[in-house]
Each structure stands twice: as C-alpha cells, then as structure tokens.
Amino acid sequence: MSRPHTSIHDHFIRAILSDKEIAIDYFQNYLPLSVSEKLDLSSLTQVTDTYLSDELKKSMSDIVYNCLSTDKKEEVKVSLLLEHKSYPDKNTPAQIGHYIFSGLQKQIQNKEKLSVIIPVLLYHGKGKWPYQKLSGLFKTRFQAWDQFIPDFDYIYNNLGEIPGEQVESLNNNFLVASLLALKHSFQKDWLEQNALKILLLTEQAPKNLQSNLVVYLFGNGGSMSTKLKKY
Image 1 (cartoon, one colour):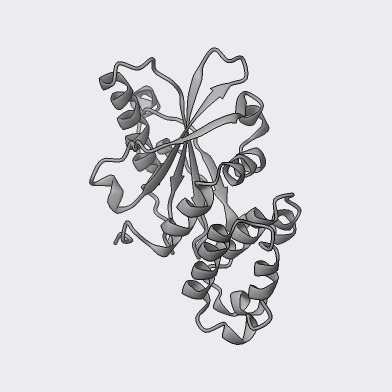
Image 2 (cartoon, rainbow, N blue to C red):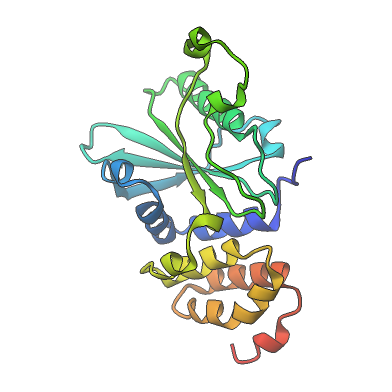
C-alpha cells in the first residue's frame, strides 16, 4: 500500500522548506553536528532536479539542495527525503539506497564531479519506526556475505520521538509551529486545542507561509473555526 505522491503533507513540507531561511534553520537544528559543521549552510540553494524514478515517486518525495562544504572546495548535494505515511515502511532503507545510486548515476550522466548525497528521512506517522540500515533487512545471511551489501547511513528525524519542549525551544517560531503541526498531524483533538497557539507563532512569518500552515491545519484538524475566531 502506498500513499498518493501529491498529499497534503508533501505540499506543506515543500511550501515551508522552499523558504531558504526555514530550510537553513531546519538543517542547523536537525543535522548531526558532525555533518552541519562541515556545511556552509549560507550557500544552500534549492534545485528543481530530482533523483527519484517514476516507481520511487509512488512512495517518496524529495527536495534537493546544493550546498558548499566549509572548505569551499567541494559542493555537496544535501537531499531531504520526505516520507509521509501513517505507518512505518521497513523497506525504506532499500528505497534510500535506490535514491542515492540514482542520484550518483544522474551526476555521471550530466558529466558532473561526483558529490556526496546526504539523505535525510523525516517521519511523523502514527507507528513506532526504529532506525534501520539496509543490512537489517537481511535476517538470514552469512557473515562472509556482508561485504556484498551496499550499507550506508542516513539521517533519521522521527518527530514522534522528539519531545515537544525540544521543538518549542527552537529560535525560528514558524519552524516551531510547522514541526508541531506535523508532529501531531494525526491527533485531531490536539490540533484543535492548540491551533490558535500554533498560528500565533506565525504572526511574523510571510503571508504565503501562514496560508500554507492554515490550509494544513484545517486539512488535518477538521473543523476548527471556533478555535480560530480570534486569529
């Protein structure tokens, strides 16, 4: 079972992370320090290219950024994989591997110098979903065969496991509002009770971002008109 490629979640994430300031704040806060300190995030540029095959688009979406490394000698592809399912998908590591190698193949076809692709998986579904590498999909194997499994790491942001207090401690209020809306996207009661609080956090944000958040809240929280009369 796969989700439609164009979902309310995809539209919302694409809208907020198309804003360079929001994207930079997201990466600064949710990339491991060992990664972020090697990136010049001020050079972050979103590109329209995608590394997804038609088949992979049925279950994933991606946002691709170019970013210079801090030594200015290498350009890095920072790729954010958006996975918006209401259930975990154990085969995601294989999908990410497909994504990485498709991206490298496209760089070769374009006669580009190969650059590192850093995949980031953002999950906010209902079920628990522990981090798992590709090797974890092979339950029965000989140790001598491990060398033939193209294992790799990816950055996993599971909003369900990030405490709300930690999200609310971020400096960017619109990013706080957006992550809270995503974190509780399947909890209609919570969204209805906290809709005004979320929207008040966005008062200084551009109108287009505010509009996208309102649409997202109404799409997930049902009827919230009574909660939003003061907004």
